[in-house]
Length: 315
Ligand SMILES: Nc1ncnc2c1ncn2[C@@H]1O[C@H](COP(=O)(O)OP(=O)(O)OP(=O)(O)O)[C@@H](O)[C@H]1O
Ligand SMILES: [Mg+2]
Image (tube, rainbow, N blue to C red; front, top):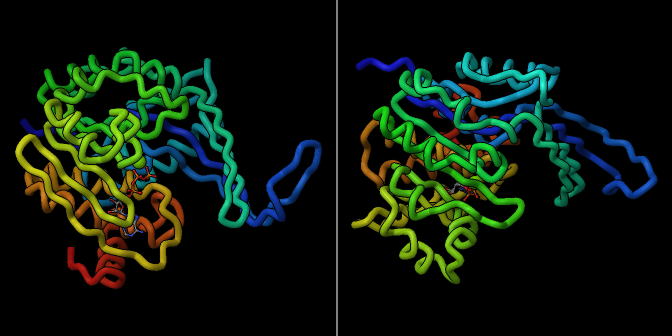
């Protein structure tokens, strides 16, 4: 059956208010002036959705925001990247989440108000909407307690409707890591942790041990390893693919989400594990050539040009 969307993203939405060029980090009772300010679309899920769209997928989003100015910024930013926003819920009861980022030299301090994302729940993820897509991607479960509570049932629902699925849990700010991997991972076609998250989730003391701990439950797992590239594991395979090294990293914000976009793009084209990892490494590396998570993904042409100029790849 012809589907309306390649990917439906279920996840958190917020804006980032970024204050740059500070004379210091602020101190209690004092005021400082930032020389630069930027209000942008934040959130791992939104970076994934935007970049997946730029890479050529038809993408829709299911998430929750407030009926407010920041919510409008979120909607407009996604629409600008051609992400369908019809299924984003705008509630009167909650405000749109925000992260205030204070950048001072190499250091930064952040304050997050999660807002509406905390109440996104299984009822909001409608079957008739899931049915429109080939694939469901879920990100940042620990920032979304109502979603986390029923995360296995959400994946079960998608699988029973015939979708393939992927999951990037992201960091748990409470460091409780309270999800049931044994039950959840068999429902996840592509599991996308980074090394630190995999160690924390399994309680293992090294990566090999962590991989063996989850191996009985996974389908495909791609472990993101920063400037060491990525490692792909299935029940029968275990391969490491070298990165496209970028010696002039602007910042690595969203590199993991961009990796996810690249990997899932090739997964949906039924490409080999090796090729999914290679393209994930490329989209992750391109991400690091511009500021923020979406800066390097303005269009497919621009992405291709950067891949060619910086990494000598004709993707
Ligand atoms: N300095 C770098 N040079 C080249 N490629 C990089 C660099 N940093 C990251 N990448 C690529 O991006 C991928 C994802 O980055 P990373 O491992 O930092 O993910 P993550 O920890 O999930 O990131 P995020 O903070 O976005 O959640 C890596 O596997 C690698 O392929
Ligand atoms: Mg990540």
